[in-house]
Length: 105
Image (cartoon, rainbow, N blue to C red; front, side, top):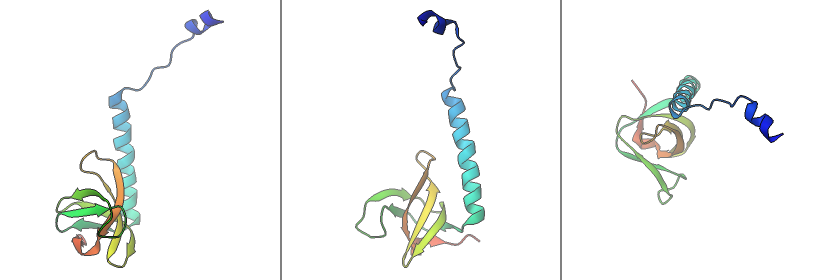
């Protein structure tokens, strides 16, 4: 039985490049769909993305000026957003103060 496994064709695994291409394509589709369904905003200054809508919560990331984010929820002075991280280009979510965001022109 052990030798029969050696005769079967081995599957071809995807390369790192192929996996990255598929991920980028899927995230592009995801981003486009989010922009169609939800509002998006642009940061008007360097701003911190927080894990909770509080000033003393954990800082997830700092976003540069003119960075595009998609609004998921609004909670008084805070906005829950999703965006593609400038570091690794993967989707992230977090809270940003509403005053740091402008509507696109």
